[in-house]
Length: 389
Image (cartoon, rainbow, N blue to C red; front, top):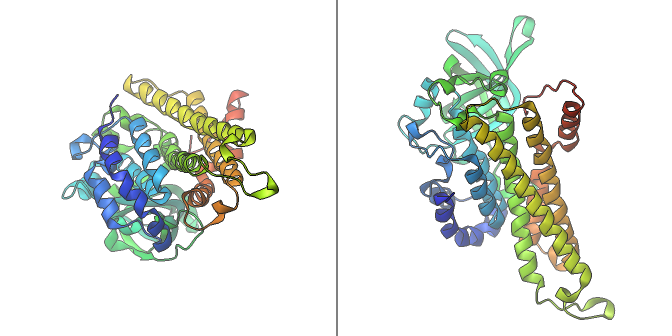
């Protein structure tokens, strides 16, 4: 299948690559890049057609994410995270979708899913307060998806939900100063006693079980695939892209390098150990991309046929997603180690990819042992309960 958005994006990649160092140093992806990617249709790939979106095959979306991440990890991360939110918004009630997209189908939505917010029932909805961390690209967004707990009797949590909040109802605290993914500006969001109407609230339990209220109006197969499969792949796809970009930079930089250390000299490319390192890294990156694409494709094909998505497939998606992250990081580590002391210099693509990929690797979606243990439980016929399956 052709990917028209990818064709548009490839024309933008040289300029995105040229901005990558400034993105890292200034801790922001510039509005210019976001505008170019918006006009290319990147952020509407998973948006419903009824709201001006493309409603694309999700595999095509992750292809675009990987290509952008290969030249700038922070920009690719934002594309993945901000680009997946139209898919989730499509699962909210129609009234919420109309509020966001009714006047501007190109509006962007950020998120912070940890259920740290507190929702107190009020007439027609809830009062929301809290501070959420790690909201990537929130400065570019007009709305936010935020996790929260509905407080019940005696102040005890009664439900876990995700709420949709307009920019006017929260503040952004500029706190993002980290070693990797610096340009994502994943700052804190703060809300104090904001009113959230009931139609802008969805239960996480319902999303995990493919019962989003928006499915009544968005009936296409894209909106009948699991949140756990979509969200976790959204986190791993840019990391695979970073590893791919690191590999390209490594091969280009090392192909003609002459070793001066250890008294041996000689071309680096003639070193058999270097050749093996390249082969290992390339194989890990290929395996990561091929497995994730295969799994997402199978999930989507089940939805296209109107079939239930089996638990075995959902567990396999998580198994291979965390392993894909591991494989990408292993590839980058091999390349970084064998590139020698020059890879330590700030600002070179190998060093930046190493920092960005490892920063992405600590995301909660990449809890490797937990995901693998769930797969093992399923294989042994034991019950598995998790909202990211």
